[in-house]
Image 1 (cartoon, rainbow, N blue to C red):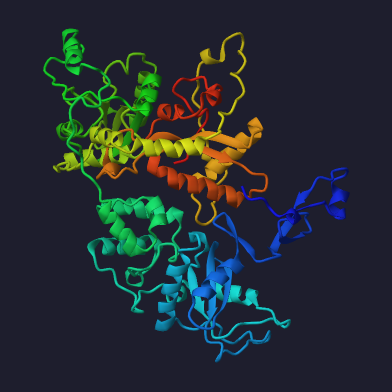
Image 2: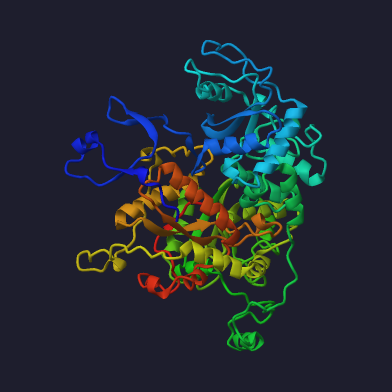
Length: 624
Protein backbone atom coordinates (compact mmCIF):
# COMPACT_ATOMS: atom_id res chain seq x y z
CA UNK A 1 0.00 0.00 0.00
CA UNK A 2 1.37 3.44 -0.97
CA UNK A 3 2.14 5.70 1.96
CA UNK A 4 0.89 9.27 1.93
CA UNK A 5 3.54 12.01 2.23
CA UNK A 6 4.14 13.04 5.84
CA UNK A 7 2.77 16.54 5.12
CA UNK A 8 -0.67 15.09 4.59
CA UNK A 9 -0.97 14.29 8.31
CA UNK A 10 -0.51 17.46 10.33
CA UNK A 11 -0.85 18.64 13.89
CA UNK A 12 -4.27 20.13 14.61
CA UNK A 13 -4.40 23.91 14.09
CA UNK A 14 -5.17 26.21 17.02
CA UNK A 15 -8.80 26.76 16.01
CA UNK A 16 -9.39 23.01 16.05
CA UNK A 17 -7.77 22.61 19.46
CA UNK A 18 -10.22 25.18 20.76
CA UNK A 19 -13.07 22.96 19.62
CA UNK A 20 -11.59 19.55 20.48
CA UNK A 21 -10.31 20.17 23.98
CA UNK A 22 -7.38 17.99 24.98
CA UNK A 23 -7.25 16.05 21.70
CA UNK A 24 -3.93 16.55 19.90
CA UNK A 25 -3.88 13.59 17.51
CA UNK A 26 -2.81 14.35 13.96
CA UNK A 27 -5.44 15.21 11.38
CA UNK A 28 -5.66 14.50 7.66
CA UNK A 29 -5.32 17.54 5.40
CA UNK A 30 -7.69 16.86 2.52
CA UNK A 31 -6.85 19.93 0.43
CA UNK A 32 -10.50 21.01 0.23
CA UNK A 33 -11.48 24.66 0.64
CA UNK A 34 -14.75 25.14 2.52
CA UNK A 35 -16.58 27.64 4.70
CA UNK A 36 -19.06 27.58 7.55
CA UNK A 37 -22.63 28.58 6.78
CA UNK A 38 -24.73 30.59 9.21
CA UNK A 39 -26.48 27.43 10.44
CA UNK A 40 -23.16 25.75 11.28
CA UNK A 41 -23.03 23.48 8.23
CA UNK A 42 -19.95 23.32 6.03
CA UNK A 43 -20.15 24.39 2.38
CA UNK A 44 -17.58 22.91 0.00
CA UNK A 45 -16.05 25.54 -2.32
CA UNK A 46 -13.21 24.00 -4.32
CA UNK A 47 -9.87 22.22 -4.11
CA UNK A 48 -6.71 23.96 -2.97
CA UNK A 49 -4.77 22.03 -5.62
CA UNK A 50 -5.76 20.44 -8.94
CA UNK A 51 -6.84 17.16 -7.37
CA UNK A 52 -10.40 16.07 -8.16
CA UNK A 53 -12.61 13.07 -7.53
CA UNK A 54 -14.62 11.37 -10.27
CA UNK A 55 -16.52 8.05 -10.06
CA UNK A 56 -15.09 7.57 -6.59
CA UNK A 57 -11.49 7.92 -7.82
CA UNK A 58 -9.19 10.79 -6.85
CA UNK A 59 -6.58 12.04 -9.34
CA UNK A 60 -4.64 15.13 -10.45
CA UNK A 61 -5.97 17.17 -13.36
CA UNK A 62 -2.40 18.12 -14.19
CA UNK A 63 -1.63 14.49 -15.00
CA UNK A 64 -4.49 14.37 -17.52
CA UNK A 65 -3.31 17.65 -19.02
CA UNK A 66 0.25 16.34 -19.34
CA UNK A 67 -0.74 13.19 -21.25
CA UNK A 68 -3.14 15.00 -23.59
CA UNK A 69 -0.64 17.78 -24.32
CA UNK A 70 2.20 15.32 -24.93
CA UNK A 71 0.20 13.39 -27.54
CA UNK A 72 -1.56 16.28 -29.25
CA UNK A 73 0.18 17.43 -32.49
CA UNK A 74 1.75 20.88 -32.58
CA UNK A 75 1.97 23.57 -29.90
CA UNK A 76 -0.92 22.95 -27.55
CA UNK A 77 -2.27 24.38 -24.34
CA UNK A 78 -4.54 21.97 -22.43
CA UNK A 79 -6.84 22.53 -19.48
CA UNK A 80 -8.65 19.57 -17.88
CA UNK A 81 -11.64 20.20 -15.68
CA UNK A 82 -14.47 18.17 -14.13
CA UNK A 83 -17.73 19.88 -15.08
CA UNK A 84 -21.12 19.17 -13.55
CA UNK A 85 -24.02 19.21 -16.00
CA UNK A 86 -27.55 18.16 -15.08
CA UNK A 87 -26.26 16.68 -11.79
CA UNK A 88 -23.68 14.56 -13.63
CA UNK A 89 -19.93 15.13 -13.34
CA UNK A 90 -17.89 14.72 -16.55
CA UNK A 91 -14.21 15.18 -17.38
CA UNK A 92 -13.60 17.79 -20.11
CA UNK A 93 -10.37 18.64 -21.94
CA UNK A 94 -10.15 22.17 -23.38
CA UNK A 95 -7.63 22.40 -26.23
CA UNK A 96 -5.95 25.53 -27.60
CA UNK A 97 -3.88 24.18 -30.47
CA UNK A 98 -3.22 27.29 -32.60
CA UNK A 99 -1.59 29.78 -30.28
CA UNK A 100 -0.23 31.92 -33.11
CA UNK A 101 -3.74 33.11 -34.00
CA UNK A 102 -5.13 32.93 -30.49
CA UNK A 103 -6.28 36.08 -28.77
CA UNK A 104 -6.05 36.20 -25.02
CA UNK A 105 -9.34 36.86 -23.32
CA UNK A 106 -9.30 39.41 -20.53
CA UNK A 107 -11.42 39.28 -17.42
CA UNK A 108 -13.91 41.73 -18.94
CA UNK A 109 -14.22 39.74 -22.17
CA UNK A 110 -17.24 37.80 -20.90
CA UNK A 111 -19.23 38.16 -24.13
CA UNK A 112 -16.48 36.82 -26.39
CA UNK A 113 -16.83 33.35 -27.85
CA UNK A 114 -14.46 30.80 -26.31
CA UNK A 115 -15.37 27.49 -27.94
CA UNK A 116 -14.48 26.69 -31.52
CA UNK A 117 -16.40 24.26 -33.71
CA UNK A 118 -14.96 20.75 -34.02
CA UNK A 119 -13.15 20.67 -37.39
CA UNK A 120 -12.21 17.47 -39.18
CA UNK A 121 -8.52 18.00 -38.35
CA UNK A 122 -9.39 18.43 -34.67
CA UNK A 123 -11.58 15.33 -34.47
CA UNK A 124 -8.93 13.22 -36.24
CA UNK A 125 -6.34 14.47 -33.74
CA UNK A 126 -8.65 13.76 -30.79
CA UNK A 127 -9.24 10.20 -31.99
CA UNK A 128 -5.49 9.58 -32.16
CA UNK A 129 -4.84 11.23 -28.79
CA UNK A 130 -7.56 9.25 -27.09
CA UNK A 131 -6.13 5.99 -28.41
CA UNK A 132 -2.67 6.95 -27.11
CA UNK A 133 -3.65 8.08 -23.62
CA UNK A 134 -5.80 4.98 -23.06
CA UNK A 135 -2.54 3.02 -23.02
CA UNK A 136 -1.26 4.94 -19.99
CA UNK A 137 -4.32 6.28 -18.15
CA UNK A 138 -7.27 4.46 -16.54
CA UNK A 139 -10.75 4.95 -17.98
CA UNK A 140 -11.87 7.45 -15.35
CA UNK A 141 -8.99 9.77 -16.39
CA UNK A 142 -9.94 9.77 -20.09
CA UNK A 143 -11.76 13.02 -20.96
CA UNK A 144 -15.32 12.35 -22.08
CA UNK A 145 -15.38 15.53 -24.18
CA UNK A 146 -12.60 17.41 -26.02
CA UNK A 147 -13.46 21.04 -26.82
CA UNK A 148 -11.31 23.26 -29.10
CA UNK A 149 -10.81 26.83 -27.90
CA UNK A 150 -10.75 30.05 -29.88
CA UNK A 151 -8.59 31.49 -27.13
CA UNK A 152 -7.65 30.78 -23.54
CA UNK A 153 -9.46 32.85 -20.88
CA UNK A 154 -7.35 34.46 -18.18
CA UNK A 155 -8.12 36.22 -14.91
CA UNK A 156 -6.92 39.73 -14.06
CA UNK A 157 -3.97 38.14 -12.25
CA UNK A 158 -2.87 36.33 -15.42
CA UNK A 159 -3.95 32.83 -14.36
CA UNK A 160 -6.07 30.49 -16.47
CA UNK A 161 -9.72 31.26 -15.79
CA UNK A 162 -10.90 27.73 -15.02
CA UNK A 163 -14.18 28.96 -13.58
CA UNK A 164 -15.14 30.56 -16.89
CA UNK A 165 -14.33 27.36 -18.80
CA UNK A 166 -16.40 25.45 -16.26
CA UNK A 167 -19.38 27.81 -16.63
CA UNK A 168 -19.25 27.79 -20.43
CA UNK A 169 -19.10 23.99 -20.59
CA UNK A 170 -21.89 23.56 -18.04
CA UNK A 171 -24.11 25.82 -20.16
CA UNK A 172 -23.74 23.68 -23.31
CA UNK A 173 -26.90 21.95 -24.49
CA UNK A 174 -26.98 18.22 -25.20
CA UNK A 175 -27.15 18.95 -28.93
CA UNK A 176 -24.09 21.21 -28.73
CA UNK A 177 -22.16 18.52 -26.86
CA UNK A 178 -22.96 16.01 -29.60
CA UNK A 179 -21.06 18.20 -32.09
CA UNK A 180 -17.86 17.38 -30.17
CA UNK A 181 -18.38 13.62 -30.44
CA UNK A 182 -15.47 11.31 -31.19
CA UNK A 183 -15.23 10.57 -34.95
CA UNK A 184 -13.42 7.97 -37.04
CA UNK A 185 -10.08 8.39 -38.75
CA UNK A 186 -11.67 9.84 -41.88
CA UNK A 187 -13.10 12.69 -39.83
CA UNK A 188 -16.70 11.65 -40.44
CA UNK A 189 -19.11 10.08 -37.99
CA UNK A 190 -19.88 6.58 -39.21
CA UNK A 191 -23.51 5.58 -39.38
CA UNK A 192 -24.25 2.15 -37.84
CA UNK A 193 -24.17 -0.35 -40.68
CA UNK A 194 -24.57 -3.87 -39.30
CA UNK A 195 -27.81 -5.29 -37.95
CA UNK A 196 -26.39 -5.43 -34.43
CA UNK A 197 -25.19 -1.81 -34.61
CA UNK A 198 -28.56 -0.59 -35.85
CA UNK A 199 -30.31 -2.53 -33.08
CA UNK A 200 -28.12 -0.89 -30.43
CA UNK A 201 -28.55 2.49 -32.12
CA UNK A 202 -32.32 2.21 -31.72
CA UNK A 203 -31.98 1.09 -28.10
CA UNK A 204 -29.57 3.89 -27.18
CA UNK A 205 -31.75 6.50 -28.86
CA UNK A 206 -34.79 5.19 -26.99
CA UNK A 207 -33.32 5.05 -23.49
CA UNK A 208 -31.26 8.25 -23.84
CA UNK A 209 -34.05 10.26 -25.44
CA UNK A 210 -31.98 11.16 -28.51
CA UNK A 211 -32.83 11.09 -32.22
CA UNK A 212 -31.48 7.88 -33.74
CA UNK A 213 -29.67 9.94 -36.39
CA UNK A 214 -27.56 11.55 -33.64
CA UNK A 215 -26.26 8.19 -32.43
CA UNK A 216 -23.23 7.06 -34.44
CA UNK A 217 -21.26 3.82 -34.56
CA UNK A 218 -18.20 5.27 -32.82
CA UNK A 219 -20.12 7.03 -30.06
CA UNK A 220 -19.52 5.85 -26.53
CA UNK A 221 -22.45 5.17 -24.25
CA UNK A 222 -21.25 7.35 -21.40
CA UNK A 223 -20.27 10.25 -23.67
CA UNK A 224 -23.94 10.40 -24.64
CA UNK A 225 -24.91 10.93 -20.98
CA UNK A 226 -25.51 7.25 -20.32
CA UNK A 227 -25.13 6.01 -16.77
CA UNK A 228 -25.32 2.73 -14.91
CA UNK A 229 -29.07 3.02 -14.39
CA UNK A 230 -29.71 3.43 -18.11
CA UNK A 231 -27.16 0.68 -18.81
CA UNK A 232 -29.43 -1.81 -17.04
CA UNK A 233 -32.22 -0.93 -19.48
CA UNK A 234 -29.85 -1.26 -22.44
CA UNK A 235 -28.77 -4.73 -21.34
CA UNK A 236 -32.39 -5.82 -20.93
CA UNK A 237 -33.52 -4.47 -24.32
CA UNK A 238 -30.45 -5.90 -26.07
CA UNK A 239 -31.36 -9.42 -24.95
CA UNK A 240 -34.68 -9.06 -26.74
CA UNK A 241 -32.80 -8.46 -30.01
CA UNK A 242 -30.65 -11.59 -29.58
CA UNK A 243 -27.55 -9.84 -28.22
CA UNK A 244 -26.33 -10.89 -24.80
CA UNK A 245 -24.96 -7.71 -23.25
CA UNK A 246 -24.60 -7.26 -19.52
CA UNK A 247 -24.11 -4.04 -17.60
CA UNK A 248 -20.47 -4.96 -17.05
CA UNK A 249 -20.03 -5.41 -20.83
CA UNK A 250 -21.27 -1.86 -21.44
CA UNK A 251 -18.57 -0.58 -19.10
CA UNK A 252 -15.93 -2.77 -20.76
CA UNK A 253 -16.93 -1.96 -24.37
CA UNK A 254 -18.27 1.62 -24.36
CA UNK A 255 -18.25 2.42 -28.14
CA UNK A 256 -21.42 1.31 -29.90
CA UNK A 257 -19.56 -0.55 -32.65
CA UNK A 258 -17.38 -2.43 -30.14
CA UNK A 259 -20.37 -3.34 -27.99
CA UNK A 260 -22.32 -4.58 -31.02
CA UNK A 261 -19.41 -6.74 -32.17
CA UNK A 262 -18.99 -8.16 -28.67
CA UNK A 263 -22.71 -8.87 -28.49
CA UNK A 264 -22.52 -10.88 -31.72
CA UNK A 265 -19.52 -12.90 -30.55
CA UNK A 266 -21.23 -13.48 -27.21
CA UNK A 267 -24.65 -14.11 -28.74
CA UNK A 268 -27.41 -15.73 -26.74
CA UNK A 269 -27.49 -19.50 -26.58
CA UNK A 270 -30.62 -21.56 -26.80
CA UNK A 271 -31.40 -24.47 -24.59
CA UNK A 272 -28.60 -26.99 -24.99
CA UNK A 273 -29.31 -30.64 -25.45
CA UNK A 274 -29.00 -32.14 -22.02
CA UNK A 275 -28.36 -35.62 -20.75
CA UNK A 276 -31.20 -36.83 -18.49
CA UNK A 277 -30.25 -37.43 -14.84
CA UNK A 278 -26.77 -35.94 -15.41
CA UNK A 279 -27.32 -33.39 -12.62
CA UNK A 280 -29.02 -35.80 -10.26
CA UNK A 281 -27.38 -36.24 -6.87
CA UNK A 282 -28.73 -39.81 -6.70
CA UNK A 283 -26.21 -42.42 -7.78
CA UNK A 284 -28.73 -44.82 -9.35
CA UNK A 285 -31.73 -42.69 -10.44
CA UNK A 286 -33.49 -45.49 -12.37
CA UNK A 287 -33.63 -47.70 -9.27
CA UNK A 288 -34.75 -44.74 -7.19
CA UNK A 289 -37.65 -44.01 -9.57
CA UNK A 290 -38.65 -47.67 -9.58
CA UNK A 291 -38.86 -47.64 -5.78
CA UNK A 292 -41.01 -44.48 -5.89
CA UNK A 293 -43.49 -46.21 -8.21
CA UNK A 294 -43.62 -49.32 -6.01
CA UNK A 295 -44.38 -47.13 -3.01
CA UNK A 296 -47.12 -45.34 -4.94
CA UNK A 297 -45.44 -41.95 -4.60
CA UNK A 298 -45.68 -41.18 -8.32
CA UNK A 299 -48.69 -41.57 -10.63
CA UNK A 300 -48.49 -44.85 -12.48
CA UNK A 301 -49.17 -43.26 -15.86
CA UNK A 302 -46.51 -40.56 -15.54
CA UNK A 303 -43.06 -40.87 -16.98
CA UNK A 304 -40.37 -38.97 -15.10
CA UNK A 305 -37.95 -37.68 -17.69
CA UNK A 306 -35.35 -36.25 -15.32
CA UNK A 307 -34.37 -35.63 -11.71
CA UNK A 308 -32.94 -32.18 -11.04
CA UNK A 309 -31.56 -30.87 -7.75
CA UNK A 310 -33.41 -27.90 -6.36
CA UNK A 311 -31.54 -24.64 -6.03
CA UNK A 312 -30.64 -23.27 -2.64
CA UNK A 313 -33.45 -20.73 -2.96
CA UNK A 314 -35.98 -23.46 -3.81
CA UNK A 315 -34.92 -25.48 -0.77
CA UNK A 316 -35.16 -22.33 1.34
CA UNK A 317 -38.75 -21.68 0.26
CA UNK A 318 -39.77 -25.34 0.45
CA UNK A 319 -38.60 -25.60 4.04
CA UNK A 320 -40.72 -22.58 4.95
CA UNK A 321 -43.77 -23.69 2.94
CA UNK A 322 -44.11 -20.24 1.42
CA UNK A 323 -47.40 -20.06 -0.46
CA UNK A 324 -48.42 -16.91 -2.29
CA UNK A 325 -51.82 -15.90 -3.57
CA UNK A 326 -52.44 -13.64 -6.55
CA UNK A 327 -55.81 -12.09 -7.30
CA UNK A 328 -56.70 -10.64 -10.72
CA UNK A 329 -59.96 -8.93 -11.59
CA UNK A 330 -61.57 -9.73 -14.94
CA UNK A 331 -64.52 -8.03 -16.63
CA UNK A 332 -66.92 -9.25 -19.32
CA UNK A 333 -67.58 -12.76 -20.57
CA UNK A 334 -65.05 -15.42 -19.56
CA UNK A 335 -65.07 -18.85 -21.18
CA UNK A 336 -64.46 -21.27 -18.31
CA UNK A 337 -63.31 -24.15 -20.52
CA UNK A 338 -60.87 -21.98 -22.49
CA UNK A 339 -59.44 -20.52 -19.30
CA UNK A 340 -59.02 -23.95 -17.73
CA UNK A 341 -57.30 -25.21 -20.87
CA UNK A 342 -55.01 -22.17 -20.84
CA UNK A 343 -53.96 -22.77 -17.23
CA UNK A 344 -53.21 -26.43 -18.02
CA UNK A 345 -51.29 -25.75 -21.25
CA UNK A 346 -48.08 -27.71 -21.69
CA UNK A 347 -45.01 -25.70 -20.82
CA UNK A 348 -46.92 -23.04 -18.90
CA UNK A 349 -45.68 -24.15 -15.48
CA UNK A 350 -42.06 -25.29 -15.61
CA UNK A 351 -41.43 -26.22 -11.99
CA UNK A 352 -43.96 -29.06 -11.67
CA UNK A 353 -44.56 -32.57 -13.05
CA UNK A 354 -46.36 -31.96 -16.31
CA UNK A 355 -48.48 -35.10 -16.09
CA UNK A 356 -50.02 -34.07 -12.77
CA UNK A 357 -53.38 -32.34 -13.30
CA UNK A 358 -53.44 -28.72 -12.12
CA UNK A 359 -56.51 -28.06 -9.95
CA UNK A 360 -58.95 -25.61 -11.53
CA UNK A 361 -62.18 -24.61 -9.81
CA UNK A 362 -65.01 -22.29 -10.88
CA UNK A 363 -67.40 -20.85 -8.30
CA UNK A 364 -70.25 -18.73 -9.68
CA UNK A 365 -73.20 -16.72 -8.34
CA UNK A 366 -71.17 -14.82 -5.73
CA UNK A 367 -72.56 -11.52 -4.42
CA UNK A 368 -69.38 -10.13 -2.81
CA UNK A 369 -66.44 -11.21 -4.97
CA UNK A 370 -63.74 -9.41 -3.00
CA UNK A 371 -65.01 -10.61 0.36
CA UNK A 372 -65.42 -14.20 -0.84
CA UNK A 373 -61.91 -14.21 -2.33
CA UNK A 374 -60.41 -12.84 0.88
CA UNK A 375 -62.23 -15.39 3.04
CA UNK A 376 -61.22 -18.19 0.69
CA UNK A 377 -57.51 -17.51 0.97
CA UNK A 378 -57.64 -16.84 4.70
CA UNK A 379 -59.23 -20.25 5.18
CA UNK A 380 -56.61 -21.95 3.00
CA UNK A 381 -53.76 -20.13 4.73
CA UNK A 382 -54.67 -21.76 8.05
CA UNK A 383 -54.58 -25.28 6.58
CA UNK A 384 -51.68 -27.57 7.34
CA UNK A 385 -51.83 -29.92 4.36
CA UNK A 386 -51.69 -27.45 1.47
CA UNK A 387 -48.08 -27.97 0.47
CA UNK A 388 -48.37 -31.72 0.99
CA UNK A 389 -50.53 -31.82 -2.13
CA UNK A 390 -50.14 -29.81 -5.30
CA UNK A 391 -49.22 -26.22 -4.37
CA UNK A 392 -50.47 -24.79 -7.67
CA UNK A 393 -54.14 -23.98 -7.94
CA UNK A 394 -56.43 -21.80 -10.07
CA UNK A 395 -59.85 -20.64 -8.82
CA UNK A 396 -62.22 -18.54 -10.93
CA UNK A 397 -64.88 -16.61 -9.02
CA UNK A 398 -67.85 -15.06 -10.88
CA UNK A 399 -70.65 -12.77 -9.72
CA UNK A 400 -74.37 -13.39 -10.20
CA UNK A 401 -74.46 -11.75 -13.66
CA UNK A 402 -71.24 -13.55 -14.72
CA UNK A 403 -69.83 -10.20 -15.88
CA UNK A 404 -67.31 -9.63 -13.11
CA UNK A 405 -64.74 -12.22 -12.14
CA UNK A 406 -61.70 -12.77 -9.95
CA UNK A 407 -58.99 -15.23 -10.97
CA UNK A 408 -57.09 -16.51 -7.95
CA UNK A 409 -53.72 -18.17 -8.47
CA UNK A 410 -51.88 -20.03 -5.73
CA UNK A 411 -48.18 -20.81 -6.12
CA UNK A 412 -45.33 -21.76 -3.86
CA UNK A 413 -42.35 -19.42 -3.98
CA UNK A 414 -40.22 -22.39 -5.04
CA UNK A 415 -41.96 -22.10 -8.44
CA UNK A 416 -41.65 -18.41 -9.26
CA UNK A 417 -39.89 -15.11 -8.67
CA UNK A 418 -40.92 -11.51 -9.32
CA UNK A 419 -39.84 -11.69 -12.97
CA UNK A 420 -41.93 -14.83 -13.57
CA UNK A 421 -45.41 -13.58 -12.68
CA UNK A 422 -45.84 -11.18 -15.66
CA UNK A 423 -44.65 -13.97 -17.96
CA UNK A 424 -47.17 -16.39 -16.42
CA UNK A 425 -50.06 -13.98 -16.99
CA UNK A 426 -48.97 -13.22 -20.54
CA UNK A 427 -48.73 -16.93 -21.34
CA UNK A 428 -52.20 -17.64 -19.91
CA UNK A 429 -53.64 -14.80 -22.00
CA UNK A 430 -51.79 -16.08 -25.07
CA UNK A 431 -53.23 -19.60 -24.71
CA UNK A 432 -56.71 -18.30 -23.89
CA UNK A 433 -56.76 -16.24 -27.11
CA UNK A 434 -55.69 -19.18 -29.26
CA UNK A 435 -51.98 -18.48 -29.44
CA UNK A 436 -49.15 -20.92 -28.93
CA UNK A 437 -46.24 -20.55 -26.57
CA UNK A 438 -42.91 -20.35 -28.38
CA UNK A 439 -40.05 -20.48 -25.92
CA UNK A 440 -36.48 -21.55 -26.52
CA UNK A 441 -35.58 -22.09 -22.86
CA UNK A 442 -37.29 -23.31 -19.73
CA UNK A 443 -36.33 -23.68 -16.08
CA UNK A 444 -34.67 -27.12 -16.49
CA UNK A 445 -32.58 -25.64 -19.32
CA UNK A 446 -31.68 -22.78 -16.99
CA UNK A 447 -30.49 -25.23 -14.32
CA UNK A 448 -28.33 -27.09 -16.84
CA UNK A 449 -26.87 -23.90 -18.27
CA UNK A 450 -26.13 -22.46 -14.83
CA UNK A 451 -24.33 -25.66 -13.92
CA UNK A 452 -22.08 -25.29 -16.99
CA UNK A 453 -20.73 -21.86 -16.02
CA UNK A 454 -17.02 -21.42 -15.09
CA UNK A 455 -17.28 -22.14 -11.39
CA UNK A 456 -13.59 -21.85 -10.55
CA UNK A 457 -13.43 -18.33 -11.96
CA UNK A 458 -16.53 -17.41 -9.98
CA UNK A 459 -15.10 -18.94 -6.80
CA UNK A 460 -11.88 -16.96 -7.29
CA UNK A 461 -13.87 -13.74 -7.55
CA UNK A 462 -15.86 -14.38 -4.38
CA UNK A 463 -12.77 -15.68 -2.58
CA UNK A 464 -11.00 -12.40 -3.26
CA UNK A 465 -14.11 -10.40 -2.38
CA UNK A 466 -14.62 -12.16 0.98
CA UNK A 467 -10.96 -12.56 1.96
CA UNK A 468 -10.52 -11.66 5.62
CA UNK A 469 -14.23 -11.03 6.16
CA UNK A 470 -16.24 -11.99 9.24
CA UNK A 471 -19.92 -12.62 9.71
CA UNK A 472 -21.61 -9.92 11.81
CA UNK A 473 -22.74 -10.90 15.31
CA UNK A 474 -26.31 -9.85 15.98
CA UNK A 475 -28.32 -9.52 19.13
CA UNK A 476 -29.55 -12.85 20.46
CA UNK A 477 -33.14 -14.03 20.04
CA UNK A 478 -35.85 -12.00 21.79
CA UNK A 479 -36.58 -12.82 25.40
CA UNK A 480 -39.62 -15.00 26.20
CA UNK A 481 -42.97 -13.21 26.25
CA UNK A 482 -45.31 -14.19 29.08
CA UNK A 483 -43.36 -17.36 29.60
CA UNK A 484 -43.53 -18.40 25.95
CA UNK A 485 -40.54 -18.58 23.65
CA UNK A 486 -40.45 -15.97 20.92
CA UNK A 487 -40.63 -18.65 18.24
CA UNK A 488 -43.94 -19.92 19.61
CA UNK A 489 -45.65 -16.53 19.64
CA UNK A 490 -48.37 -16.43 17.00
CA UNK A 491 -47.65 -14.28 13.96
CA UNK A 492 -50.04 -11.49 13.06
CA UNK A 493 -50.47 -9.71 9.76
CA UNK A 494 -49.23 -6.13 9.62
CA UNK A 495 -50.79 -3.60 7.26
CA UNK A 496 -48.58 -0.67 6.29
CA UNK A 497 -50.35 2.51 5.19
CA UNK A 498 -48.17 4.14 2.55
CA UNK A 499 -49.63 7.54 3.42
CA UNK A 500 -47.30 7.60 6.40
CA UNK A 501 -44.21 6.43 4.55
CA UNK A 502 -41.48 8.80 3.44
CA UNK A 503 -41.27 9.42 -0.32
CA UNK A 504 -38.79 7.32 -2.26
CA UNK A 505 -35.41 9.09 -2.14
CA UNK A 506 -33.87 10.22 -5.41
CA UNK A 507 -30.36 8.74 -5.78
CA UNK A 508 -27.55 10.77 -7.37
CA UNK A 509 -27.14 10.65 -11.13
CA UNK A 510 -25.53 7.37 -12.18
CA UNK A 511 -26.47 5.58 -8.95
CA UNK A 512 -29.30 3.05 -8.75
CA UNK A 513 -31.91 3.04 -6.01
CA UNK A 514 -30.75 -0.48 -5.08
CA UNK A 515 -27.26 0.90 -4.48
CA UNK A 516 -28.70 3.62 -2.26
CA UNK A 517 -30.66 1.06 -0.24
CA UNK A 518 -27.60 -1.17 0.19
CA UNK A 519 -25.53 1.81 1.32
CA UNK A 520 -28.19 2.66 3.90
CA UNK A 521 -28.30 -0.93 5.14
CA UNK A 522 -24.50 -1.03 5.36
CA UNK A 523 -24.59 2.11 7.50
CA UNK A 524 -27.28 0.60 9.75
CA UNK A 525 -25.27 -2.61 10.20
CA UNK A 526 -22.07 -0.71 10.86
CA UNK A 527 -23.74 1.35 13.57
CA UNK A 528 -25.58 -1.65 15.06
CA UNK A 529 -22.59 -3.97 15.43
CA UNK A 530 -19.83 -1.38 15.76
CA UNK A 531 -17.76 -2.66 12.84
CA UNK A 532 -16.59 -1.09 9.58
CA UNK A 533 -16.07 -4.36 7.67
CA UNK A 534 -19.61 -5.37 6.70
CA UNK A 535 -20.94 -8.50 4.98
CA UNK A 536 -24.59 -8.99 4.11
CA UNK A 537 -26.63 -10.70 1.42
CA UNK A 538 -28.35 -9.15 -1.57
CA UNK A 539 -31.15 -10.67 -3.61
CA UNK A 540 -30.49 -10.69 -7.36
CA UNK A 541 -32.78 -11.82 -10.17
CA UNK A 542 -30.15 -14.31 -11.42
CA UNK A 543 -31.01 -13.71 -15.08
CA UNK A 544 -27.71 -12.41 -16.39
CA UNK A 545 -26.69 -15.73 -17.95
CA UNK A 546 -26.37 -15.74 -21.78
CA UNK A 547 -29.40 -17.96 -22.26
CA UNK A 548 -32.04 -16.99 -24.79
CA UNK A 549 -35.50 -16.10 -23.49
CA UNK A 550 -34.16 -16.09 -19.94
CA UNK A 551 -36.45 -13.24 -18.90
CA UNK A 552 -39.50 -15.31 -19.84
CA UNK A 553 -38.49 -18.42 -17.89
CA UNK A 554 -41.06 -19.24 -15.23
CA UNK A 555 -39.02 -20.33 -12.25
CA UNK A 556 -37.16 -19.02 -9.20
CA UNK A 557 -33.95 -17.85 -10.85
CA UNK A 558 -33.37 -15.37 -8.03
CA UNK A 559 -30.39 -15.84 -5.78
CA UNK A 560 -28.68 -14.30 -2.77
CA UNK A 561 -25.08 -13.15 -3.13
CA UNK A 562 -22.77 -11.50 -0.61
CA UNK A 563 -22.04 -7.80 -0.44
CA UNK A 564 -18.77 -7.02 1.31
CA UNK A 565 -17.97 -3.41 2.25
CA UNK A 566 -15.07 -1.92 4.14
CA UNK A 567 -16.12 1.54 5.24
CA UNK A 568 -13.09 3.81 5.62
CA UNK A 569 -13.17 6.80 8.01
CA UNK A 570 -12.35 9.29 5.25
CA UNK A 571 -14.88 7.80 2.81
CA UNK A 572 -17.62 10.11 1.56
CA UNK A 573 -21.18 9.03 0.81
CA UNK A 574 -20.46 9.26 -2.91
CA UNK A 575 -17.37 7.06 -2.44
CA UNK A 576 -19.49 4.42 -0.70
CA UNK A 577 -22.15 4.52 -3.41
CA UNK A 578 -19.62 4.11 -6.21
CA UNK A 579 -17.88 1.28 -4.33
CA UNK A 580 -21.15 -0.62 -3.89
CA UNK A 581 -22.24 -0.14 -7.47
CA UNK A 582 -18.86 -1.10 -8.93
CA UNK A 583 -18.83 -4.32 -6.90
CA UNK A 584 -22.37 -5.13 -8.01
CA UNK A 585 -21.56 -4.60 -11.70
CA UNK A 586 -18.57 -6.93 -11.46
CA UNK A 587 -20.45 -9.55 -9.42
CA UNK A 588 -23.23 -9.91 -12.01
CA UNK A 589 -20.87 -12.21 -13.92
CA UNK A 590 -20.68 -14.61 -10.95
CA UNK A 591 -24.09 -14.42 -9.26
CA UNK A 592 -25.03 -17.98 -10.28
CA UNK A 593 -23.28 -19.66 -7.32
CA UNK A 594 -25.42 -20.70 -4.35
CA UNK A 595 -24.54 -19.47 -0.87
CA UNK A 596 -23.53 -22.95 0.43
CA UNK A 597 -20.86 -23.07 -2.30
CA UNK A 598 -19.53 -19.68 -1.21
CA UNK A 599 -19.46 -20.73 2.42
CA UNK A 600 -16.69 -23.20 1.66
CA UNK A 601 -14.31 -20.47 0.45
CA UNK A 602 -14.39 -18.55 3.74
CA UNK A 603 -11.65 -19.72 6.16
CA UNK A 604 -13.07 -21.91 8.91
CA UNK A 605 -11.87 -19.53 11.59
CA UNK A 606 -14.03 -16.84 10.08
CA UNK A 607 -17.19 -18.94 9.88
CA UNK A 608 -17.75 -19.70 13.52
CA UNK A 609 -20.24 -16.87 14.02
CA UNK A 610 -22.67 -18.35 11.49
CA UNK A 611 -24.72 -21.13 13.02
CA UNK A 612 -26.88 -22.17 10.07
CA UNK A 613 -25.11 -24.83 7.95
CA UNK A 614 -26.30 -23.35 4.65
CA UNK A 615 -26.06 -19.68 5.43
CA UNK A 616 -23.15 -17.34 4.76
CA UNK A 617 -24.90 -14.01 5.28
CA UNK A 618 -26.84 -13.31 8.46
CA UNK A 619 -28.74 -10.36 7.00
CA UNK A 620 -30.25 -10.00 3.54
CA UNK A 621 -31.05 -6.73 1.79
CA UNK A 622 -33.99 -7.08 -0.60
CA UNK A 623 -32.71 -4.48 -3.09
CA UNK A 624 -33.01 -5.79 -6.63
